[in-house]
Image (cartoon, rainbow, N blue to C red; front, side):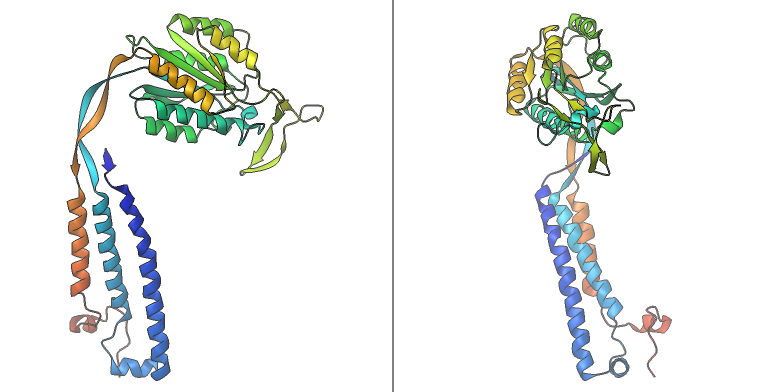
Length: 347
């Protein structure tokens, strides 16, 4: 495991293309100027030891040296020890609806992207709490097992899309069953399941599923996205909209948010339904719930004893700079004998 102490120094790499551009311009200017006063054949006679290849090679060594020194400034650190640490927090599982109806743009940018924004901002508000992510449509799948790595949670979240689920629909029941397997700490007294959906395609046995998970101490909060007026479901190809979903009669399908279904799910587990069309409303509500919850202690493993690795990059960088200094632009006698650079012998 590694981490970067000063990643801001990566911006210094922006000088590399500038240096390359200046070097190419200088080569072009030299060539153009030489052509005004002397021919290539005569130049080869007057300066037989001149080598463009070696000047380019020197410049490459210079760039490599500077690159390694920049990385040294960033100071990569390597974790050398995996230790078990104790933390206090709650378990929060997000069940994200990724069905096609979540692509409707009745709220900007669309229901799915709005849901991702909400989850990401909630994760930012969490402390040492553990998080997990489930995605569901016609089936439910684990996107991220429960973890304390909030950065990984946000990274996996960005990749969630309808294509990750093989069948369409809204299998809330499967999401509820899968969520029950996520809570692996029997001593955890506060377990939360946050379902984010437009509430369509409710299944009859959902009420019993909610009761079952509630009996295991899980509080279910639901966040509804979309409008009651609704909107068409776009059909996308290669990132572009090529039309809208139609029914068998050829009419455009309008998908609507079903808040009453989500309210029923939340009330069946001592949770709460929250309108998600305004991002800050569910973020503040969930933050308040988690903050006031009783925290349980749990163990987690993490890398420690991070050691500086910059010295390796400093050493390699200086080596390349020394090569650049002592590497002459002129051809050396032994190189000239083996004709390493495929230059024509002067007559």
